[in-house]
Amino acid sequence: MNRPDELAAAPAGAREVVTPSWRLTVPAHVTAESPLIAVPTIHPRGDRRVIRCAQDALNAGFRVRFIWLGADDQPATDPAASEVILPKARSLRQRLGVIPKLAKIAAAEPADLWHIHDLYLLPSAKRWHRRTGRNVLYDVHEYYGLVYAERLGIGGAPGRWLNRAVNRYQVRAARR
Image (tube, rainbow, N blue to C red):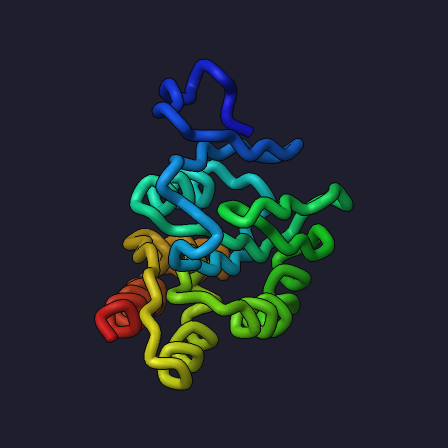
């Protein structure tokens, strides 16, 4: 959760949405009619990287709807910053297993665009984009290829190949 000393002073007319896991400042110009960004992610509820991006979206005039994994807390229901909370995953296998459900919930939202942070959601995001014609914003992480090669214990030439393949896939998918 963001600490109060990390938050800039709220602009006039802004209000805060606060949960046990995160806090966002909603500018006065964001209303229930503002465009909606769906944010499906396997990151845990309140992940600071996701929250920082959501704050930027709010500042730009968008509403945000998180679909993520977390505790059994009450989800935020504010029209500008709301969430769907799925059960917390205990392993990477469980996080990967919930991807179809995350994508299904996000696809059911009346979202103007998706913002994804997970390589694993790229196939679902691409399908949603093809079906709706709406855009997807994806944070390309140039280190993903290295991370997966290390996690799988793949070194040498095969590890370098995996690194390049993952990075090419991300960039190609994000370009579209």
